[in-house]
Image (cartoon, helix red, strand yellow):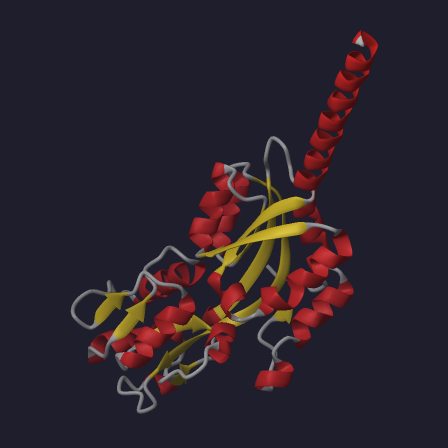
Length: 273
């Protein structure tokens, strides 16, 4: 009787150990991706992540926030890998020792969108900073994300370059992601700064591109593997997978069929920063 009880106890312990190992293996195949709302709103993540998970056996939990918040999640150890577009903040993140690696993945560009009539006449501006100066001087409404995102950081840098401190009734913050901010800007006949991809992918907007194409509107995205005490293997897997030639080609093709132009330009081979 004692022998049978002992065998049963050993068997039960074996099941628990196997269960624990299985749980550990499952946990090791998961990672948290903190990324920008633009990669989510454009549909790029929906295009890529299912294939990444199938190729690698990894499971990614995605948190779509502004770049600033994504970097904060990484700094606190609440994310394993980041896909962000705020270069100055990213470099500070790396310098402070929070990242293991930072790789160029892709870029698109920012555009200034606004009412079809372009009341501030920004279409003829020499660069984006001058376009914002014209908006401020005209008092035309401007919708800012105001959310510490990469787009918000870029907007603030452009205002600083323009020598303008935006304030007053014409300037308002939405505190929302890019898609929501574009919708609000359209409803209020306001200008806004947006990445081109989200603008093209957001349906039924009451806005058009008012200014584009200057060098100060480039928008670079990097994959950062977060430095954690227990690194998630899938974080490194995702960073490496995004740089593979066939994945980079897919990034370059994304949006062409639907919008007639790519929403992102691959950067892995070019090494653009």
